[in-house]
Each structure stands twice: as structure tokens, then as C-alpha cells.
Image (cartoon, rainbow, N blue to C red; front, side, top):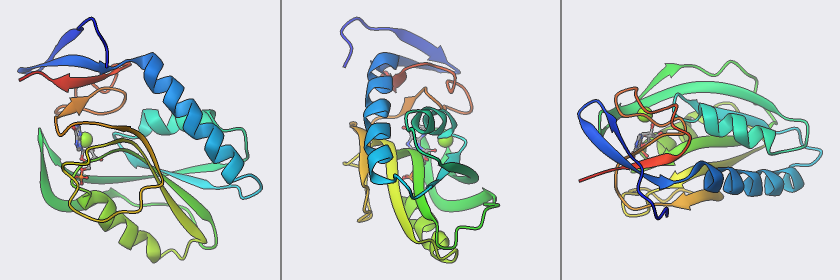
Length: 182
Ligand code: IMP
Ligand code: MG
């Protein structure tokens, strides 16, 4: 998506810029505007899936102009460059979601294991409605039928970092999204 290649090194791997900070901001602003119209008067609760979604959630919330709240949970299924298949809850939600409109802000949906697991978890809280927003989606990797309402960018099935996403905890502070260089 960018013409001039910006290459960076994290641990033992090289990554190449794939989505610029400007492209990310533009898309996040667009989704924020849509959410503002859709959830006007509903005071939605954004649920940010840590750690990867913290930057996306912060930008997405600020791209809306309606009263809203935020809550955090930490789920984990990735180890290095691959999904382990089992989803662990490392931080529990601390909000009452009963009768609330919930917007899940996820950084990336890969196999969909994490989201499938979390959507089932959420049902226990009896929310009024649940809406799924993901900044990135790897359609070729998806293994579950998920109702994803808003997708920032569909990307190829290659490992990416930046804008909150990590490779073994590094790279989260990159302003753009970078793709693993083979
Ligand atoms: P899934 O359960 O396979 O859909 O993976 C979801 C989680 O794995 C995301 O929330 C990320 O934390 C992590 N993940 C998946 N793909 C990538 C990637 O390309 N780079 C960094 N993290 C990823
Ligand atoms: Mg991660």
C-alpha cells in the first residue's frame, strides 16, 4: 500500500511498512463517524481487547463525538508469530454490561478463535447488543463464521506489527502497520 519501502528490524526479523499512519488515521476516522451516527443516544461501551487494541481503541473513541465508555479485557492466544489455538483470559472485564450496547474493538482477526471465544463469554453479561469492529482482518486465515460489522483493512495472511500489534512485545509503538519480510 506504500510505494517507498520503509524497513525496520524487531528482534530477529525484518518488517516492511504496509499501511501508513495517514491511511490508518483516515480509515479510523471514517469508522468513528459511522459509529457516531449509529450509536447516537445509546452511550455504547467500547471493549478494548488488550494489549494489541489499545492504540486502535484510543483513536477510534476519539473519532466519535457521542457519549461513550470504555472497558478493558486481556485475552491471549498468540505466541511469537502464531496462534496457539487456546484462548486465555488474563484480565477480566470490570463493567456491568447488562442492557448496554457493546462495541468490541479488536486490533486484528486472524483465525477468529479469540473472537469466537470472547463472543460466547460476553453472552453471560446479557448486553443489549454486541457489535464487532476490527482494524485488520486476514480473510484467508479465518476459520469461524463471525459477524464482523466493521473492518478497517482486509490484509493478506502475513504477520504484521505496529499501531499496537507486536512481535514478542516489540513494535507496538510503530505509527504504521508493518508486514513481515520473507
Ligand atoms: P485469532 O484468535 O487467530 O483471530 O488471533 C487474534 C489475536 O492474535 C489478535 O488479537 C492478535 O493479538 C494476535 N495476532 C493475530 N495475527 C497477528 C499478526 O499478524 N500480528 C500480531 N498479532 C497477531
Ligand atoms: Mg499480540
